[in-house]
Length: 232
Image 1 (cartoon, rainbow, N blue to C red):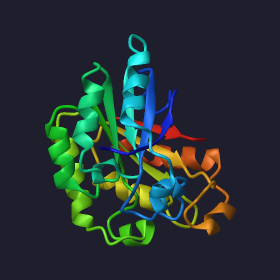
Image 2: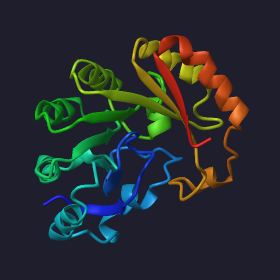
Image 3: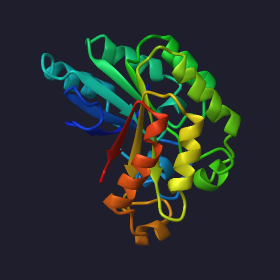
């Protein structure tokens, strides 16, 4: 059974427009140094697992007012029985938002093909050519491109987003990413948070200022229908 490693009972920013909770699944195939979910990524087995019957009771107790569940991680698509979890949620007439890093395009296509997911958000970590540096993994950049195509052709409402990190991902990177995603309806620029990072050196990095992020967002607006900022 799927191992839920955490829950945010009220997550108003994760699925805008809906009263939602977010659940976190453990494990990830990326090692982004700035990631603030270090325990979920590096030590998921050390975290307690929420029993599925408790999760089902949680959903049932909120019937009538809870509208959606965001399934996040880690990387949820690593979970072999993810569809079982999605059915548990969907059987209660709740909307589902899926977060993914886009490294598993075939798995992503299969899950979206179930029609259980109502919204998908993909983190585009870097422009092509910088993925190994930014994610500290051996992900095939072609898989990232394929996942972008899967999402765009799925018919599922979606967004792409990138976390900007001084010294690692900046305005030039965003412009390159924007060119790759040109025409997408929604892109979100996310602020880096120097807390609980995988690489402790990133605890000392000062995030971009709001004016700097506003400048980046303005620079990429021509590529998208809408550009949002998060965490500033």
